[in-house]
Length: 271
Length: 213
Image (cartoon, rainbow over all chains, first blue to last red; front, side):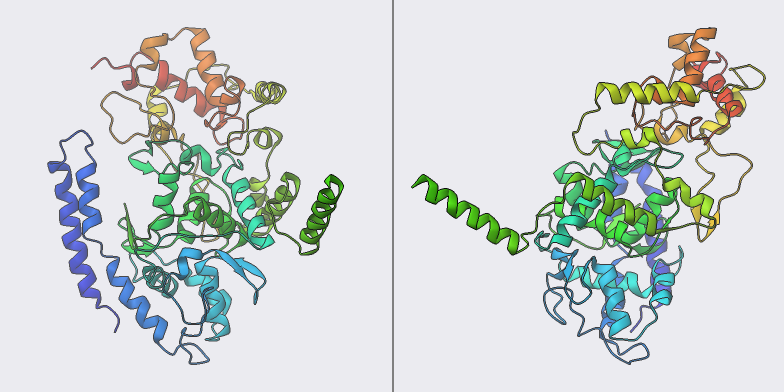
């Protein structure tokens, strides 16, 4: 059963109230720490897991099929631990795919949805009920909660993806001259008040790879890694990153491989 | 004996090649694969906007992977290109109005592309606040770049300071090749006039950046 909207609203109000109180409490060395802790402890993103589960088992689309036959790399219908090994090479598509691109493949092939329609709606408007893909991605990833990221490179296309991702992480372009590393290459950095994760550091990159999909407080919806990447390119003044494109999968492969060993804990909570 | 060992090694190597043993591609192949992705995986409302993805010579040099170091000749090339990029306001005045500069420094918007549209504004924001501490006591400021608090107090507001400040904002790579600081004038993100206002914001004794509090 879909989660009632009023429940979300109530949670949002409670959450906003705690947020508002945070600065008053936070007088310690790091004035933001208390607020961050409070946000992490009461995560409205949990509500999306149930919704994703419902969507996964429902017979949907023109073919009236569930996603139970979808193979995320460890066998059709097997979800436990599946995302610890993504992105990976899939022989049937002859491509390296991340969770979201694989999900799109299954929604098209098994359920008969139109690819362009899914992609168009994949990233939901802020303040909305979220998209199907966002809920599904969270549910599927939550089935790897408590397990360690364990990406392996064995197929040539996996090696190629990884190296392309590394290259792109350092590739500067556009009128702001930015690559990923300009903001994510050092510890304890912020853009205005927003913490920037130190991704050339093992611990930092492990935080990235284990906390998406995440509830994005400012948007009141669950966001995925695809959204995170899209939004970075937007802020860098670059053209729009295509959903589930190779650039996004390359960067995800690079980061996830670096983050091997991280224990998955979703939904994360982001400001 | 030794010869036999070598024979096995050669055989082993041949077997690996025959099996198509997967491994990391070399630099040139990686570049080719990744650049193809870049050319295919983005959309923009106009073809001209897609050109933003193309690297210029300096950006190519400044995209070193991992701990790879910038060679001396490369740094010199970046500095040379940066110096050649300098343009100054038509008026010749490198110090504008600090109040206009203050607004610009706190403006992080302009020229972003979303939902198939370009964010149209009269002018782009200066983006300074994103990365630099500005006036004393200001909390909502980043720390990717060095603090600019008291910039003018430390340096004064002589003509030489104004020119250096102007050029460092216009194209930081003339003084610090490949630094994280965007070449705000060099890439045309800001106009020379806007940069002159930012100079005023940094060095004018009346600017909040230089308030002694």
